[in-house]
Length: 479
Image 1 (cartoon, rainbow, N blue to C red):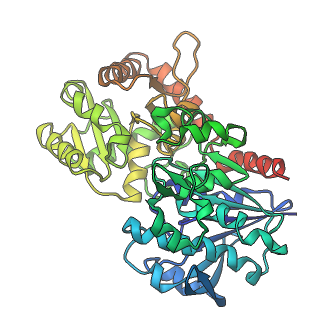
Image 2 (image 1 turned 90 degrees about the vertical axis):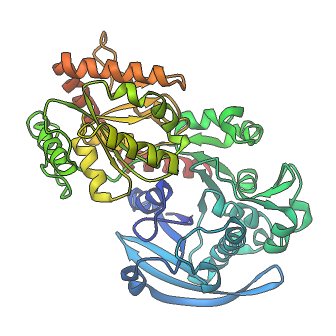
Image 3 (image 1 turned 90 degrees about the horizontal axis):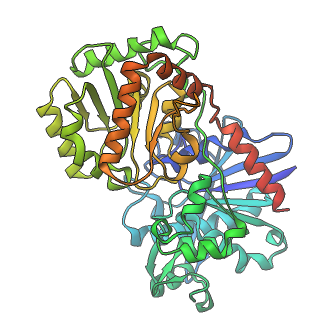
């Protein structure tokens, strides 16, 4: 039996700010239970939902040195969906209304959490073969593991894996402070270790010291070796290329299932979507005050409204696109200029454009189920989950060929009768517009072809089970 400890800063259903939480909460339960004992260690944030806090059971507590400070470490646990989740408790670090705050506070918070998670292992009686950490918040785990923990008999044979969910966020702060916070010797703050461009970099430390590195799609694993996507760490990614692999994220096929989804107006499946799916569109048109027309092509977007997601391209061609026979539904929050831009177009093209500038889980399901196409023109996209959800709901993705979008959406080929969506290559607004119009043409003039694209998309399997098998393979490779 192989033992694996996931250490991460968030995980569903306990705390979530992004896709990282979906991975940490959903992946562990998909491993083969006969071969793998996977447990998860998370911070016990004060802002966690009360219903979960009430269910936590006290395990133990102890005091731990963090350089010159002595800090309380409480350990609580809960079993959820057959997986044991442990929570590290310390109200000094983990109070506040949000899991992440100011970077200078987070730097100390996650140094504490990384060391506390490792220190708690012998106390809870769990000796993992592999420690799997995620993103910069746990970048110090492989560093601490190779530092003083490695001398202890308990930790000697542990291997570490770090998964990069988004290379843009690295946990960077000045060396003097980080030395003081972490208690790591000066030796660690050199250019071949934690130092990068004069500062200390948590993620870099994790990448240098981990035994294996993964990221969330095969294409993104290649892209981050190039300067454009490499966020100044491309040289390091090339140096560690032998230990780097891409494994695409999955989605929870029980939660995102048009056949059983209680949020949507009309449930449907891969057999009856031709008749039933459109009822969701009519219901959403009525709910959002759009012109009610079941035949009109609806393009959905559920996203953070940021540059990374390609909204500068959309801004450039929005007026042109609104001349077409389409409806646009946007759900999400983000940069103020994009929020206001969509509000403006909602006012200008009332009945054609609906801007829902907030986030709601039920509304996101409605958009996935009601739309005919789903637009995702990202500048970079480590994995992306929205395109997987739209495929699941028989909504045809229109994406830019980058990262996980390139790996999961096969471009439509009218001559080979293949493809599950539409894609364009260059980060160019009119290249995007022309592919949207190509999709419109197929939707309006070749309906049978359009439905076959949906058939192929709904037949794809992007559940967590596929990803779990690849992680199992990685863990065996590390032996």
